[in-house]
Image 1 (tube, protein in one colour):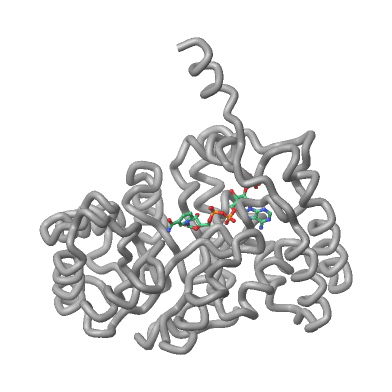
Image 2: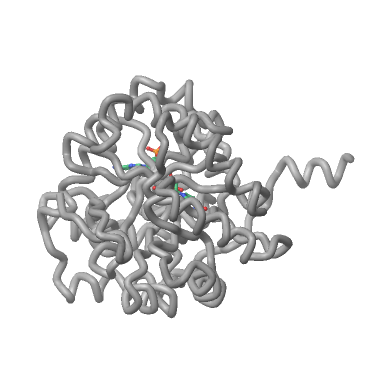
Length: 322
Ligand code: NAP
């Protein structure tokens, strides 16, 4: 495993992290497609391979994700760098402190390594939130401060409010959503702020496991604008290129996709559901893409024309027959 420093904190995190939005969430198929035992094995395999960066949030599975991690971390707390997030409706000073206490109980720990603001809330002044975060940091209850889904401007403002101690910004970054490359990622790299990439696999859309005839059935991907027959068809040339590059190195498409993001300087966190998902990740460090391959990939991306809206049959039905 390769490691990086989290912001300028001195904390060592693996260059690949584990995302746990799926853990305990029936909307992702928890309890049907995968079980608590699958997740326990995924967690243990990650630690075995040296993947120490685990991402959760008070919101995931209504708290179940944190509870599962708390259970799995029992007796091995020091081996894990755990990141959690306070929800946007809890961003008042008291709200943050209360949310932290609840998360730390669910996680069975008295400190959280990286604590994020999950989403900005324009109705709550950022200085209230920042005050609570600074207090938690000074008391050693959190080891690093993060934000998520913050634009560059908002992130700079929050960083000022926490005395330039911001360690990370977690945003959507994948082959189908490369906006962070414009200004956020270069700024973060220059200023020692870790850019954590969420949905790095575009929720599995670019791996070739789904197509127009076989679409994922879970709630979140049925809602997504990417998993439509038309987009699945349009993604085919990109998926073929990813597969060709993967075949050249004897790795899987997931490794090519992650290598691209890591080479750009981001730390991807992958939403895994089972041990085999984690096992696949480690090959990412066994090869290097050439600049020609990266260029080829980018050419395919630039020529993609995806439809960024979708019709929801159940909504249409309601409109027609209220
Ligand atoms: P993702 O990591 O791009 O995709 C996850 C999906 O990809 C899984 O559900 C799984 O589905 C498939 N997958 C996982 N590992 C795989 C592997 N090795 N090979 C092939 N397929 C694999 O998307 P995400 O879950 O949205 O994002 C990752 C994490 O980022 C989340 O778990 C969460 O921690 C975080 N996140 C944060 C925010 C935020 O607002 N801060 C928002 C979204 C996500 P199937 O196997 O069923 O296809």
